[in-house]
Length: 149
Image 1 (cartoon, helix red, strand yellow):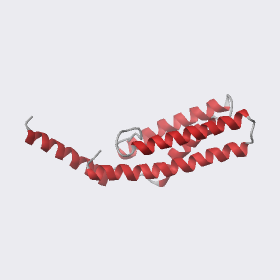
Image 2: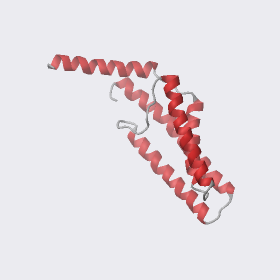
Image 3: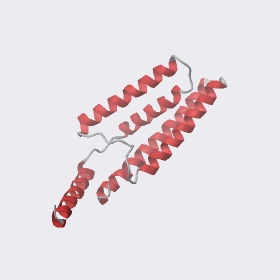
Image 4: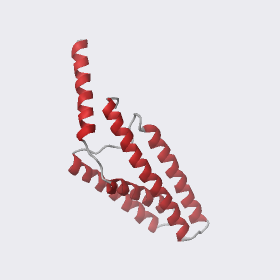
């Protein structure tokens, strides 16, 4: 492949990315909330011992599978949050924050804190995950528009 062909291929790829950003999936608020609910369920599962812990975690993993299938059916694609690019720092920050909330749930379980405390921790995880999902999508769309994905 000569340099002209290589540049044409790159230009074509960048144009396809910009087109995907312009016409690709525009996730509704409920989709972001569903992601946040899954993350909150994973966090909340750490606040309980078996069997409730296992049931919550299995529910969350089944919901992830449903979201992947639903995204592919509705939008023709599932975009994983674990990817390199401008979204990576946000993804890593979200993982760190959610691990911290999981630690708080474990603390609540070990110290036999109330259900209200456990739900409050999971509610905080929901809010953080919802905000991160909305911001992640904005960053990703901007990255595609710029052709830097």
